[in-house]
Length: 363
Ligand code: NAD
Ligand code: MN
Image (cartoon, rainbow, N blue to C red; front, side):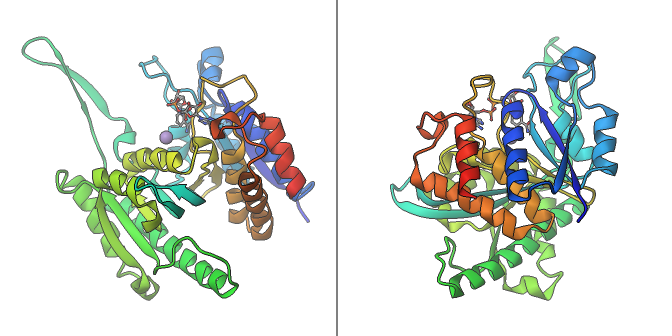
C-alpha cells in the first residue's frame, strides 16, 4: 500500500529531542509505512533567518502531508520585534480548530488524598479567545501605560468546538460500553458528560456566548440527548479538578482556559512529559505534546518522550490505524506501571533514548 507523508516540526529545545523518538515509534509499529519530512520552524530558526514559520513549511503541511508532529517552540516572554509564535500561527493558518488533550491515569492521588482513576478529555478551542493577539498600548493622562487585549469569542467557533465535545463524549461513551462488556475496568462509569468551562458570571458577553453556543449544540442531534451537560466556572474548575479529577469526562473550554487547565491536569497525572494532544481540523492533524520547549532540561537527553509518543499514537488513530495506536498506548502504560524505565520528571534516571527503546521493545 501507499506510503503516507508525515511532516515533523521539532522546532526548539526538547522538541528536537522528543519528536524523533515519536517518529521512531511510528516506524516501529508500521515499518516503512511513513515517509517523514522534517520541516523548519521555531525561535532558533527566527534568530538565524528572521523567519519563525516559513511559508514552505505551511504549504508542505497543507499540500503534501497526511499528518504532522510538532515539538515545541521557545517563545520569549518579552516582545521580540518581528517574532510571533509559529505554533499559534500554524494552528490558525491550517484551521486546526480543536486541541484535543486526553489526561488519564489509572491511579491519581487527588487533593482529598484518595487514589482514583482519571480519564479526562480536555478540548481546547484553538483559534480565538485572547490568542488572536490584538493588543494595544496607550498612555494615560499621567503618562503611564495602559494596555488592552481584545478577546474574540464567536458563535461559529464556539458551536464548532461544542460539536467536537459532544461527538467525542458520544464516541467515548460507546467505547466504554464495549470495554465494560469485555470486563475491562473503566475510569468513568457514568453517562457521557460534557463539562463547559467558562466565567460568564463576570464575562457575560464573551463567555456568555461560549456557554450558550455549546449548550445549544446539545439539541442539534438526537444522539447528544444521552450526554449529561455540566457547567463549571473556570476558577472552581481548577479547584474541583484537583479535589475530584475522577468526576470529569469531556471538558470543553475557550482557548486560554483550556491552555491553563490542561497544564494543571498534567500535574495531576505526574508530569507534563506524559500528556499528548492533537490539533485537529479540516486540513491536517498535527500531533503535539502539551509541554513547551523546557529550556531547563534541553540538551541533556533526559526529556520524557511519552507525551510525543502518545501524540503520535493519537495521530495514528486519526489516520485510521486504531490497532497500532492501541499497541503504543499499551506499551506506554506497561512501561509506566512497571516503573523501571522512567525519566527524571517521573522520579527515575532513564534517558529519552532508554524510554524510547523500552517502549519499542514492548510493542
Ligand atoms: P514547559 O512546558 O516547557 O516546561 C515546564 C516544566 O515542565 C519544566 O520544568 C520542564 O522541564 C518540565 N517539562 C516539560 N516537558 C517535559 C518533558 N517532556 N520531560 C520532562 N520534563 C518536562 O513550560 P515553560 O517552562 O513555561 O516554557 C518554556 C518555553 O516553552 C517558553 O518559551 C514557552 O513559550 C514555550 N512553550 C511552548 C509551547 C508550544 O510550543 N506549544 C507550549 C508551552 C510553552
Ligand atoms: Mn500551554
